[in-house]
Length: 352
Ligand SMILES: CC(=O)N[C@H]1[C@@H](OP(=O)(O)OP(=O)(O)OC[C@H]2O[C@@H](n3ccc(=O)[nH]c3=O)[C@H](O)[C@@H]2O)O[C@H](CO)[C@@H](O)[C@@H]1O
Image (cartoon, rainbow, N blue to C red; front, side, top):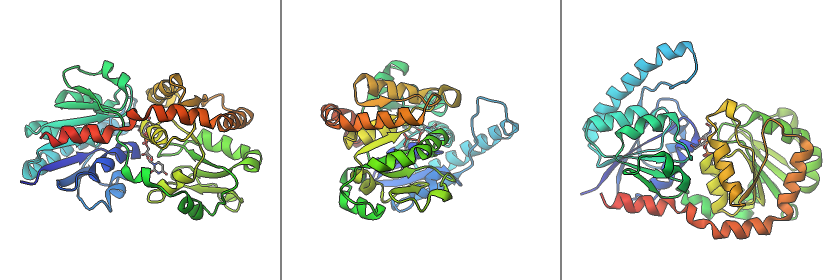
């Protein structure tokens, strides 16, 4: 009989792309995705040939906001909707990648006595996954260090689930898409799936110098394209690149990025020398700082601090990493085990 699985996760791309990595491998399964009505997951799931069911979802905030009074009701409504959807589908397993929308699905699954598998990409779990852990059967983690923060009887270290399509990019197609040539290195700047204001500012301030040595593709996040710079030769800005990302990554020689877990493991899998600027503590729970530290300890990246970032330091660091790129590539080649999440998670799913 065809096995059934329900995926959930959303809010930012990092809570969706690992699901897509698995979905593309589960050819014989009956797959449904439960996400929010308007979240990024809805767009990203399209084109993967699976059913999408939307539920009501509320944000779980740790700070005061008037919406805090309304959102618990939205979450409760979401639990009810998810419960009924799951009761009808009767999946063999639920796979949750976290983000606010996943909480009602995980609870709805638990109420239906359906096994719930969770994947955590960061070293410490986010708020949604911290709630979900209590209802979960198994917890998979990207970072080996993450296991220490999670219940021993549930946790399994799998490594990062990387989308197969990302590993199959074509450098020439990437250069063609970008309108770049092959005799100057391409610097890819990725500010996390939602962009990064400070990085965008300092990069733009540094453009005249950087463009002497690099062609630059800047994934700057929604609403962050600087229209004054659209005519600049050798500098391409995009809010978000989806289908072309594998080719764009293949065309890139060096990457400057936030330290979102999925992104940095993708760079590792593709052996791209990287400079990471983690999201600072005041704007997050500090997960990216831990992610970047872990890579830095293994000499897989260079790390710069967001708040003290200057144009001069940025240029110096980029040049230095580019100069030493083959050393980084050697170390990344030796660390590929950490990118084998798909294989390890699939072997768990196949046991069901
Ligand atoms: C602000 C915030 O809370 N960020 C968190 C969020 O990051 P965020 O959602 O940015 O997630 P990641 O950096 O982990 O992953 C981003 C994903 O989007 C893809 N991508 C990105 C840009 C683009 O133009 N096209 C594209 O396809 C990347 O290839 C990657 O697969 O989830 C991560 C994983 O839990 C955390 O580590 C981050 O701290």
